[in-house]
Image 1 (cartoon, rainbow, N blue to C red):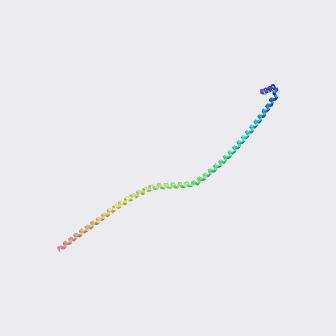
Image 2: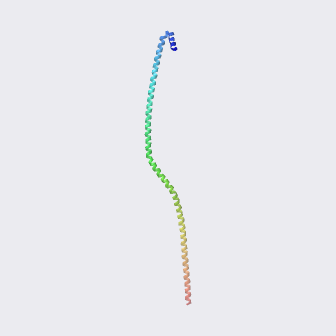
Image 3: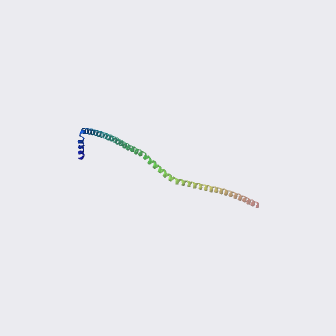
Length: 164
């Protein structure tokens, strides 16, 4: 209350300039109101534009989300298309690897058996040659023996004939 009393005392003291002060304060008040209303209008315009930008951003985000979902669906479809092929290829590769694992020891066994066969065949051929050589020698010996016996028989026969 003291402030309102002080302001009244100031008005009474300045009674000569009372009309001037009241004009100034009315003008100040109008200017303040005008500035305040301009400020409010600018604030409202800024708020309205901010809301418009926010709505545009939300709309863009909604479109981006839709596109993201669409791209994810497309990716899933692509993976679904490639997936059966991948599974088949992987299965065939696993089978090939398994067969390769089985073939490796079989190949070693085959090589080992082949070497054993060659060694056995070589030993067989050597023994066969030896047999052929022995048979040839036997035939020579038998032939020589027959020749000698025939010669002996002829000699004996001549001896017998000479005795008579």
